Image (tube, rainbow over all chains, first blue to last red; front, side):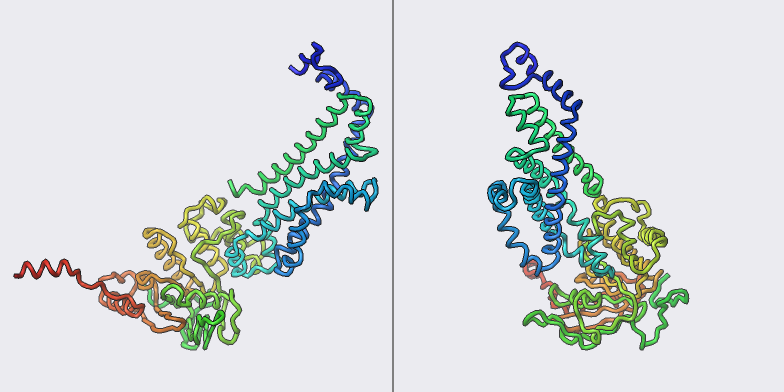
Length: 231
Length: 272
């Protein structure tokens, strides 16, 4: 239908390119290597930002989840920070970090850290103390209890957080790249905007959503494997 | 065969010798309070090797607290609670790890005592003893209440304890399953000749299982009954059992049912 509307001229190229054109554009972008290098840059950005954010989120969640002292020290500030809409921090990040890679990574990391923190912390706290006690009665040491009780017990909730945070990571990437970028998918889209190449814009958007879908499916595969005991 | 005394097994590392001096747990002057509430008041209790002790009491009398002290789940002074060998616990709920298969749940109890290669075999053996050989690879979620409780028993047994602590392990089961479990526990106890301390509020359960019934009341061990009748003969109508039952219920403060006044009236009218 989309193709039909485009072919009959009802849908002009200025509004949106036809699927065939988009296909051709995608082919050209791949042939020139533009698309691959843009994807590589964007994936690296998300990967690094995610890694930083996930480390912060997980470490704080584990410390706060396992000790009262840690909870008192970390939970209130985390709860306060999480209410900040993190896109609202962009001006501040640009002031602090300039317009290079750092503010982009900071934005992604910030978006990733909180859902992962909240869910992992909740997951650890929701473990039935009776189960932990049974493990203690069996003579399991502290680290054995972490390995056999706490981690698997918190895993379902943590994976929920992981899916949320991956979604936010891609969203943050798009926002960060749209605002300012000299490489990556967002840059490609921005450049296409200048030349009104709607076909290239659509290719960029499609790649964004495919990448998001890919990481989500990855987590779902992990979920199916790791949480087989729940079905 | 009726077994009243457990026969020592020379092969067992915890073979009971029957000396009066010997104990697997010795509690002396053990007190415990939470805030202003004195839950345990100077408890004295010896559990001999291979002895089956049942502790009775109303809810909140402190019996579970004492069991937790014996299991070292609460901080208790080492001098007040001395444990002679390995202990293990089975609780009212099975408390299995839902993310581990049945076999791995049992094998986990051997994590610090047994070589990795022997754990699975011993776990399978213990599960065989409770009749669950066909559930080795199941998830706990797939088990019935009685099966889960049997896994919990296997997990407690697999480490070959000299004292098995059972905290109301059958109270959540239906009446028929409970009778099955009583027989299973007796079988396991005879085979392994470990000492058992079972905490319950079920007087009939106590009379069916115990060598010795101790009654806890407001943090004190108030009474003791030795039940010497062989277990298969412990019908409720047996004078020894019926007598002990009446005494225990009285000690627990359960008053006998008064005669039905309606019925009495009718009889009077009939007589008139």
